[in-house]
Image 1 (cartoon, one colour):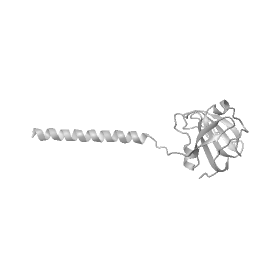
Image 2 (image 1 turned 180 degrees about the vertical axis):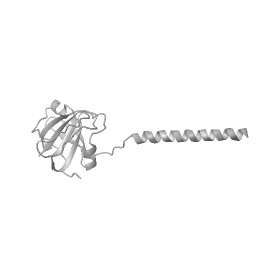
Image 3 (image 1 turned 90 degrees about the vertical axis):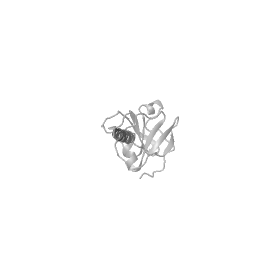
Image 4 (image 1 turned 45 degrees about the horizontal axis):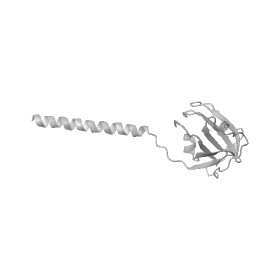
Length: 159
């Protein structure tokens, strides 16, 4: 009888142990927010090329660069709008300082510098078809300002 009692304790402990591991693994995986892969392209400025992810859906534009801990040098996110828009940007859940360029007719129309977690709105001077977010200071470091031409912008096919 003692043997049966001891085995029941071991079975209960083993079951508890397995359930605990499963719970920890489930929690760990649920904390990792899956990010689906966005299309990528290169944009060419007169003296610099940058690799960008393309946010061309309602969901990808709303998500943007939120919750990311870093953005590699010479990388960014290009927001594509179906029609010129006066949509404003903010940094509420964004962890890294960014610079934002609004783009229309293949040229930069305005540049804004944005701070992490800020709810300050950054709006285009006139409706824009694209917006490009990069690490803060990237435009200045690469001598890009209002009026700079950009090559490689995707055709407008926002969803």
